[in-house]
Structure formats: C-alpha cells, structure tokens
Amino acid sequence: MIKVCHIANNITGKADGVYAHLKMIFRNSDNKKFQHYLIFHGGKKIEKELSEMGIKVFVSQSLKKKISVKAFIDICNFIKKNDIQIIHAHFIKPYAISGLVNIFLRRKFIFNYHGLFIFKNNYYGWIEKIIYGSIHYLINIFKAVDVVLVPSKRSKELLLAETKLFPEPVVYYNGYSNDETLTEINSELYSYIEKLKKEKIIIAIVGRLEIDKRIDKAINIFKNINLRGYKIHLLIFGDGKLEIDLKNLVNKLYLIKQMDFLGYIEGVNKYYNLFDVVLFTSDWEGMPITMWEAMAHKVPVIAPDVGGFKEILEVNNCGFIYNPDNLKEAELKLQNLIADISLRENLGMNGIKAIEEKYNVNNFIKQIENVYLSLLVE
Image 1: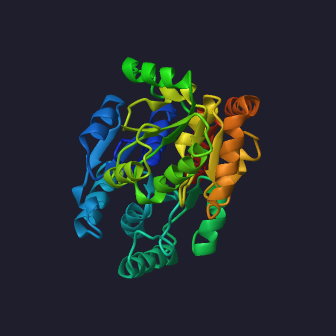
Image 2 (image 1 turned 45 degrees about the horizontal axis):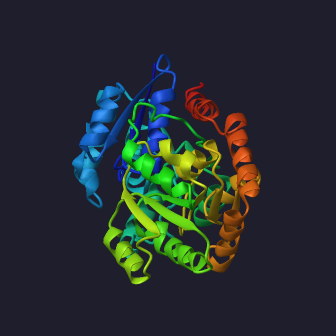
Image 3 (image 1 turned 120 degrees about the vertical axis):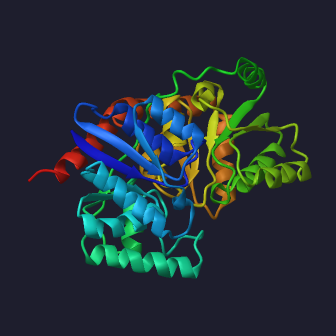
C-alpha cells in the first residue's frame, strides 16, 4: 500500500476547484494500491465528507497563520508517525512548510501548482514574497522536490517563466467526474430557472465571489448586451467576500430584475442542462472545474485567455476565448452565442464529445497514479 499525504490550505468545500481536484483523487484512486491522507487547516464540512469517504484527516490550525513553526512540527510528526511515502503539497504555504520538512525527512515530494506561485502573486506583499522566495530557493537547493504538477500547458509556461529551480513540470488535465450524484436537487430553484429559460437565454457564472474572479466585469458585459434588447438573464452561483459590493453594483446599474445571486448551491452541476452559456471573467485561473462541468453538460463556454482555457476550448471547438483586456471582444462573442442557437448546440456537442473521449476521470486518475508509481520505482 502506497501512502500519499496531501497538504492544503484555503480549501472550503464550497465552489472550490482544489477541493474538487482532491475529491476526484480520493474517490477514484485504486484503494488497494493507495492510501490517501489530508493535512489541512480544518473545516467541519470537509472533515465530515472525507471521514465518510474513509480518508484520514489531520487538522493543523497553524496552517491558517502566514508562517508557523507549529505547522512545521505538526506536518513532520504526522508524516513520520504514519510512515508517509509521498507528500503531495497544494498551494504555496503548504509547499513551503512541507518542503522544508522534506529537507530533513527525504520522502518523495510533489508540488501541485494551481495557477499562482510566489513572485507574481497579487495576494502577497513584498515581505511574504521574500520569505516564500527564500524558502523556495532553499527547498530546491537541497533537491527536496521530485515532481511538479501543473493543470495546463499554459500553467507550465507561466511557472517556468517565474522560476527555473523546479524539475520540468508535468502537465495533467482534471477533466470531469460526476461526483455529486447523492445531492438532492432543489426543485423550487430548478422550476424557477426552467421558467426563465422559456423566455430568456440563461447565462451562468459559477464560482467564488472573490477579487480574482472579476464578477464585476461579467456584470458590465451583461449590462451592455442587455441594453441591445436581447432577452437574457444572468445567474450567479457562489458566495464570497464581494457579494455585497456586487449586489450594490447590480442595483446601481438597474439590473436587479435581470440577474440573480443564488449563493453557494451544493450539486450545482444538476442545473447545467438549463444553462445556455457559461461565462468566465477571471484575472487568473489554473484549469477550473466549472469549465469541465459545462462541457460535460453540452454548454458552450466563453472565457478570457488566462490559465488553460485556450488549449481546451479552442482545440476542441467548444467555446470562445477573448483577450482579458478587451471586454468588447467578450461582448461580441457572447452576443453571437446568444443570437445563434445552432452555434450553441454545435459547441455544446463538441464539449461533451471531448469529455467522453479525452477529459474524463479515468484518464485523470491514470495520469496521477502513474506519477505516484514512477516516484517509487527503484
């Protein structure tokens, strides 16, 4: 049995791509070959879900702090006590702390990049960048990293442009896994959207209401198209720090009757068959689960040229890409989709075909398990 310990912070269990990534591994990995563990900062929802899946979870609340000696000790003790063979770190803080641990323990180590690293990270001040940058240098001088995983070819380019210390990154694609089959559908919400769809084109946004998602851009794109007289309605699924600000913006633009903030909805993939278009306006992404969900439900996607969108949507002809600095381009492409039902249907069919043939959970798990096995080959 190969023991793999995942270490993560900033996962909430709500509209959370990295947590969805972890659940895909936990649910679909061969449990006769691999035993998975998780060290994270804590959260009842995640702890309950993973306990029901048979995943051993260790909570280190010190991971909430910027840099913590206690987190270092917690991780070190857990790995030694459980005889962990592979450390799989997600996000920068877990990478920094567990990477330092691995200088001493010398286990096989994977860093999973999810779209942001250190030096171009807008969430860090210069002091944090210096600290994490120094730790990154130290970890790699001591060759404590064996594999770097990146969720797209574009992510690989961005990471290599930022640092040359890592081994050559390995590209993987999450793809789609229908893991929400036990979630009950909200019949009232479903009926409400179904009624809207009879009269209007449904544009959906699924994601956290945080600064990086730039939902304000989406609202302004919607406003301009709405002014041209199209019968459209915007549904925003998700919650976050910017919810009040975004609602105030909608009120200011007199769009309250054309939009709905629906909050975080468990099992949102059950509503995709009612969507006509899924819209992204993010400043950065790795490879969002929402894109795969849209493709799997035959919904075309419009997204900025950030992260791995382009290499999937354009290659498989299942959506449109626009320059993130050119919202007029986004408006025109969205308008084309709104006006042309046959175009939407064709792009949607291309999306589900790509999921079935290439971007499915079986291919994803095979990629990840092959990485684990390759690390332990003598």
